[in-house]
Amino acid sequence: MDQRLLDEINEKVKAALAQGPAADIEKNLRALLGGLFSRLDLVTREEFDVQREVLLRTRTKLAELEKKVAELEKQASGSASSLS
Image (tube, rainbow, N blue to C red; front, side, top):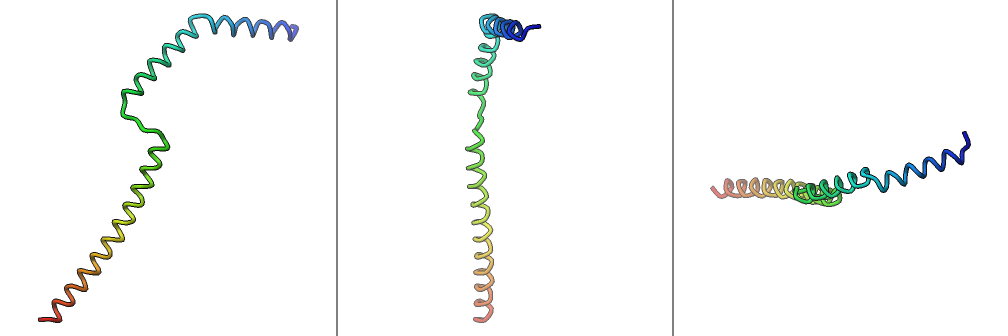
């Protein structure tokens, strides 16, 4: 077969699909899914990554503060026992 003929058939099939019910189905499906996703409480990957980093920093800071509190409690109990 001639390549030109195959290209012409391919273009006609694409044009028919673009104007036919397949394009409408795709458009309607996209609208349906878009509406469904907008009603869900979803976040973007970027928002998720930002919150994950915030949580990581918060956990690190909490661990540091817990360590400091333990050291202060140890010092306070040492000072209280030396006063007795």
